[in-house]
Length: 167
Length: 255
Image (spheres, rainbow over the protein chains, first blue to last red):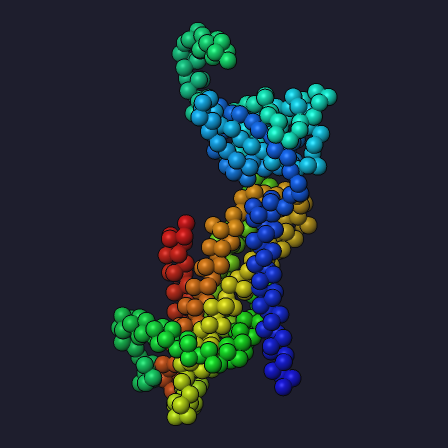
């Protein structure tokens, strides 16, 4: 009888331990761990090009994660990407002239949204829009600009002038 | 299927594969009948799962430590030691966890299943069960098969956990990698479904394959001490080959 009890207890412990390991691996070592954030507030940002930015990509200030990308939509009228950022409520002291940029972590890493704090005394509120944005750097675009710019520098300057004029 | 092979010499490989396929079908058809012997399944989970825990956990720890050392050495050449956590966890979840656990499981639990069932065959216990109207497939083979399918993913998860722990000890405590970098790189690059759950699927299949092969070798062994010895050896050889071959197929499909 005691032997039977001992293997039943052993089996139960083993199964518990196994599922606990699975639970730990699934929730603490994967992207699910990044869900573990308290109440958040939303910020919107428009980008002309978001590159490979994905849902749940991190939002960082000074390299520290403060939130994640919640939705990515294409605005039908302006044909720009409208990105909603869910920022942790703990980081509510973001000046409302902060700039958002899409960066790549490392040489080959995933893309993330970096917020560069400005100097305004006013802080962002829930639902505000980040006006100053910088789109993701496209390697092909940079190479193309470099090649074109190398051949005829005047044309490149003209393009830049035209682009700033339309903005 | 109930007649044992007359000797250790088996015919063509095709006949062997066909026999294993038929054996799988009869084991699956015996599953509803084996529900009467649920306690036997629990006992088998203890013997082939819980008793394998120590070897799996120890090996997982050392595999993680070796991975940590080797990858740190390689990654430091590219200035990418920050990626240690994610590389270790991805290689454990996707490949090493399921495969190494299956190989260890074949050595620890598979051989004991073959030897036990083979000895039952050699001492005519299986025939005696049939005589008493107890289906040996439902009472002996199927509980081990089900226990293998249940125990293997749990063992693989424990192996992975110990591996991460080992890599953490080497990378963070010994080599001075930043703790936050280790974990945040891991959480940024590991996905639950494509990495963790795919590994669980793999180990589920490996558990079924290893226990099926082990039970088949024991069930069809030549009823001599030499036959049992050969059957035990074949269990390890076939399990290793089948595990790696199925691993390749599953990786190709689950990618």
